[in-house]
Length: 163
Image: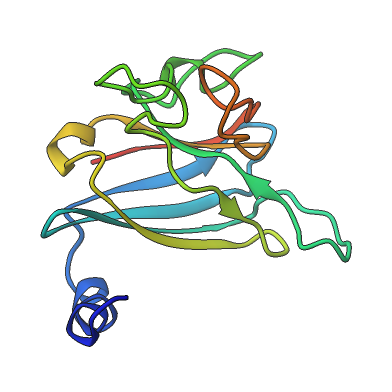
């Protein structure tokens, strides 16, 4: 259970300070309405990550909305080709050659809410210096956390470079 002191630190202090790194996420030509920001805060013992994204694809139904794969990739550019506009992002960031879902770049999924997603989590899988210059990618399907090497999360629909 989190201590009150630790909880208050995150709630009152962390989000009010400048992030240690961030990525402006934008959709590709098929999903031009996707925009968002992912913030990385160096904290004791790891990194606190907060993401906010709008314009995600969605369908209105009673089943809770879409779930999207969310990963740090090893590439340093959100470029590609007509078939895959983000092909230059490469594979998942995996400096220790761990099997999926143990890659340092494997992140919790984004849960879409009528095109909007907000997520925050803490991780010790990487440090800020390790990921600066890498890319962060949103995929069109949820990560299944078992398919090798990347979780079967499908098409890369949005990308940002971590700076």
